[in-house]
Image 1 (cartoon, rainbow, N blue to C red):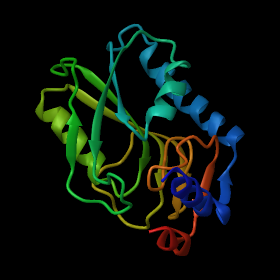
Image 2: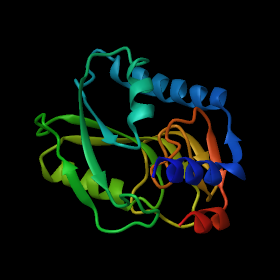
Image 3: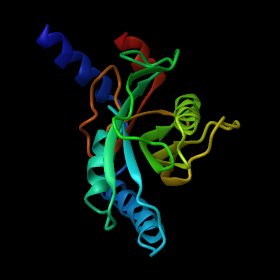
Length: 193
């Protein structure tokens, strides 16, 4: 079984094209941190609760947190529409915030704003739970050429409408650990199914 996973993972990356270098990734993280630091280092700024969306945002969230220079609380949520598949489905909450969100400014950190259904659902659910404000912070926003149900408040970088892996984003559970971003062609995705 292990040999199958290794072969499948390597086959998916064999023809992939790097579209964002590790240096560009790190610059995007630093830019997002600078925007958040400017906002939350003000004397009258709220004490935010930062929620990382697992599992895709784990890499971005971990690196972003080390660059934030204001006091905050951290928790995570686990919300998914994908599972091990690449096609979206029903939004499922696997973990809700353990911290109280009522009356708080919530900073939701996610890896990518793709179609926007999941983040729109997350934002509305947090507002329904009594959050005073919900800021959506994404490492990447994918250009789909159509209107999304929600817009991110802070974006690290914009990506073309391609299937992308690396820096927390995966394909069939593989390659979240890449330090840059790689585009995988549709035919290579189909061949790996």
